[in-house]
Amino acid sequence: MEKKTIGILGATGVVGGAALATILTATGHRVLLGGRNPEKLRGLLAGCEDRGDFWEVDVFDASKLADFCSRCDIVINCAGPAKQVLDKVAVACLEKGVHYVDVSGDEHLYRLLLTRKAEIEAKGLRFVISAGVYPGLSEIFPSYIAEEELDSTERLELFFAGQGDFSLNAAYDIVCSIEEDTGYGMSYCRDGEVRKIDGPFHKSCMLPQPAGKRDTYPVLTEEFCRMAHAHEIKAAYFYNSYQHSGILNQFVMIKALQQYKTEEQKQHSAKLLLQQFAAKKPNVDDYTMFHLHADGLRDGAPVRLTATLLYRGDWNRLSGIVAATVAQLVTEEADKKAGCYYVSEGVSQAALTQALCRQGVELALERSERTAGGAR
Image 1 (cartoon, helix red, strand yellow):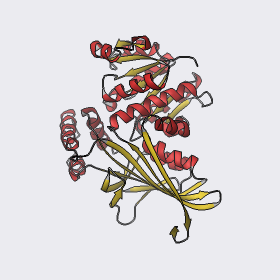
Image 2: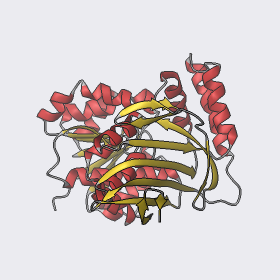
Image 3: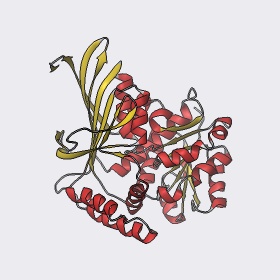
Image 4: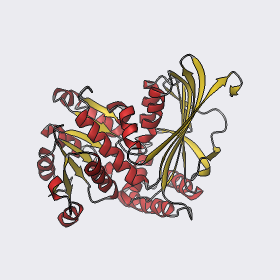
């Protein structure tokens, strides 16, 4: 297989470091690391200098960014905050004819890239965004179940739980999302359309260990809705959960008091969120979990599926693993059309899920017959 050069921007962060480790261990491709600290970048390549190189670059310096992208076959953007970077890296990749994978991304980035859709396709490029954990695995996992385990899906519920470190950049992006009112609160997807939940929306659920009992709240993203519509899932629910109630209360206060109007307010609110996420559950190691229930048909028979995707580690590292694996598939899947995609549309979900399972992600699945009164 022809070796490619995979660029990683933001390589000195936890996400970028995990992306680098994945490429070095799971592929034979070369890497080009980009960041503002050459000594840190040099240290990341210690002992494997023959596999790559590094380049001092700031994503807000258009000239250096273009030079970096021109040296790559595909670029993974792990730099942040995403709400400040926006489409800067993507545009540089487009101008240099380079494939692009973004760990972050949301409906706003997607719409920006759609304005360049014709150019992306004309150059035969694939741009894949939201290639992390949430969004990312939050669509990859149910998409895999719908594709591989069911012929049709009537109802799907997906629960997210986890514990890990949180960065100031991530908190800043969340505050910006509150300002933009991204997503749909207290809603679910019905026949491809967003519907408000009629009745109680809060659920107290017992999830598999190490999550245990969690308070969960329904929320939809554009990515999740598109995934549900693409697989013709009649009713799809996504439930987020938090390590403790203080995190949700902080979200509510930021939104209610509109603490995002100025840059100073955004930075202050981000620090408040960071403090809440820092309070981890004692005696519990970091983990990332998606737990799923689905009712549907397989081989003409009604079935009920229960599945759990578990990574026993920090969710930031998992985001880097996901993004690097997506980049690997983009370089290898010749049958995929050029264009701009959310991750659940941009690569083979079976190939991606299987590759993640080879890299420490655990998948447990249980199937049972379903009668009119429920599962047997």
